[in-house]
Image (cartoon, rainbow, N blue to C red; front, side, top):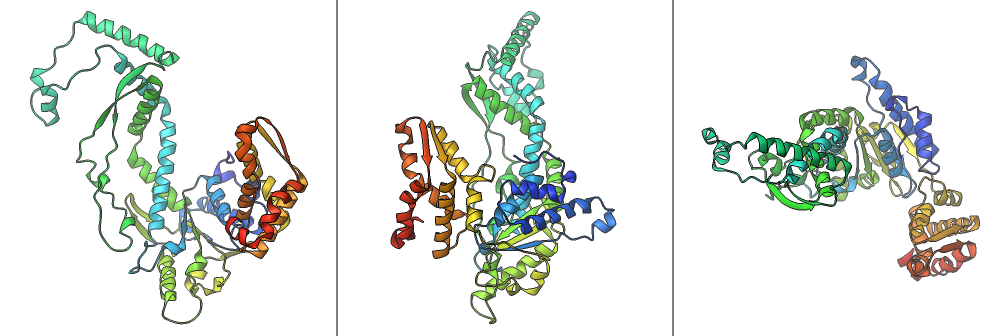
Length: 471
């Protein structure tokens, strides 16, 4: 659940407090992203002349995997409801090699912004959409409501002049009786007394045109949508469905809400929101860093990716299917483990575009123990909630939590250090038998102490052959 505050009221301290609810430790990184976010708020308060000149303070986070780099960026975007995209640098390659072009991340950002704004606009029109849906439902439930498309209807569709052959109007008495019946149906619909009745309705079918596009690298990300291009030329298709009134209300309300939303206004607002508030998180940036001098081999492609990234991060217009999105004020956050390379191995121009450098610390035993229980919807809390649905009440003692953290630290030290992700694997192994037996064992308390943890996990931790596959 996000903090219900206007973005302009968010101070750096409040941002850090929010991140503390989900991420253990890493105070330096939290403080850096909080200041970067607050600077964006400050920039929007300045006169346009100087605001245009202030570039975002992009952030480079270095630290081992599983310590919270991605989670910090994701929670930050969630807090301010900003368009957010997470990408891996390794899926981009220099133009001419196989892979996606770097501009596709900005197209993804535009898609994210449009989806976010459209969702909010649809929520705003739910009341009138519900009213329209009830009117359509009443018409569908009204006896004799079906009417075949007549020849004059078809002629009018193609611009013919068949209006003279209009359908004869019913007598006034019949019209008044139908209107009275319709009002009664509306009242019953509003009271929910017809929810279990079945009704036939026409709902619009989504158009999809499966025309493949053949081309070179990045063609999948060019923003070309054949369905959108031909959508105006193809007739709308309706599908007749027989469903319960409750389901029909949901379908018709969604359809009416779509009609009420002005997509031109949505796109304008979304592009502005993406340009001013968008956050792009580029993970595994260390994988495209050159590992030393030399002008051949894979390093050529790695450096090419960096140079392709440079104009995007510096600020440039990118064409999307919704229009041009300028990246001058998009906030870029990059992250990497930097185990075999250093941030200084990135090309100097790209380094200069990430003035804020943050080093995240490896997780210690105390951090792992806190991660198990402290964050909102913590890992152990999730398992308790899952098994509570079977009537099983899990109780983890303090020494059990400490023992899990001890064994996780040991595994990270002796094998690949995957940080907090190790806890997911270990807790799954720990509770495997309990989860399997829960539906048959019946309700009751299930205490888990340090002895239980050692009994279940110690043999796996000590056996190198087994842990290679299980832990």
